[in-house]
Image (cartoon, rainbow, N blue to C red):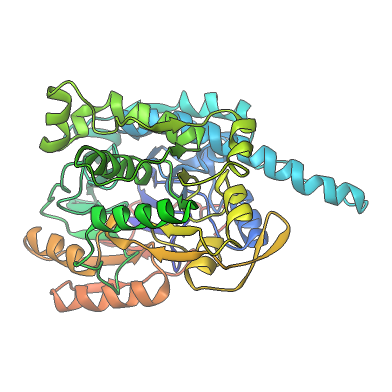
Length: 477
């Protein structure tokens, strides 16, 4: 068995790992790389593998850095199925369509300038027409159900507790007279978070591929999410300004609505309109409502009472573009939740463009901000920001709330690995910036993992000896 580390090696985006056996090749995730625009453009366009040679793909969850390049994979000739949970399939149907729209819109914007300069126009990475053929390749695989995806390789998905439908991927591989269990965490969730169940503990792994987004840090334990939200809402109510929350459409927006609902019911939320200005967030919340089988007991109990975990008076979902534009000139106070979470696209850019220079406004960052993103620059307090082609001075008040993170932190990951029982024989640390990956790798060695590797992009690792028959190298490697 070989593992090819094709994406999210040395960085936090573009997850893509291929497991190769004598019987076939299985791809784990196919995400979009996000970062410097030029680098992202090039990396996402050139898949580092032969799509036609793949037997199957297994998708851990719907976030775009794990699923977003699946249409490119299908365009390149993927013939095999894409196995994932029913909830992830439903989320991908709306998220990939939204991603295609953004690909087309971004290229249209760039091409105006290129054509004015007499340069050749770009083609979008993929279009809306590429999404239906991609969705046709999806195959539902519920939690706990084993399925042979190539001879000798069985896949089982377990609840990862990260977002709706997210999965830990287990590959049980029988090859060359030996059996090995590989566990791929995808993105590992956290225990005790609202709405979703805690991550399911999977034991018996010989080989571990783990994310490391927060591998060198802990989430603040003292943060009281409801208290912080209530205080910031009180502040903007007094100032008659606005609270702008860039939030991922899937996962984070639903968490925020859950907590705001609790505050409103407790009488702790000032009277002000709450706008969810993201059609994708609205559609994603509808998907969440269709999959209560993923809820924890507290969220399920709200359904039993005839209510829902995301229902709250005063919340307006903004679908119309013109209504979204009107918000920028409307008087405060107001709370605006808008995608994207790292401020790299979506309607939140327009709210930031109109709001960052007002010192009465508050920007609340509620998730991880990757390197070279606008969200990271705001988090770091850079005074001059480039937004939608213009330059703006950061004068708004900025806060970060890490307690809502859907990623397990260093201690939570280590606690999970201890609960797995005997340490894996080998571990590979991916999906993290270099300091975070190195720190988690060191901690895994202390736990007794035999060999721990932080792979580089394109690195190939041989597990359990040479393959039985010669194979051609993977295209692009």
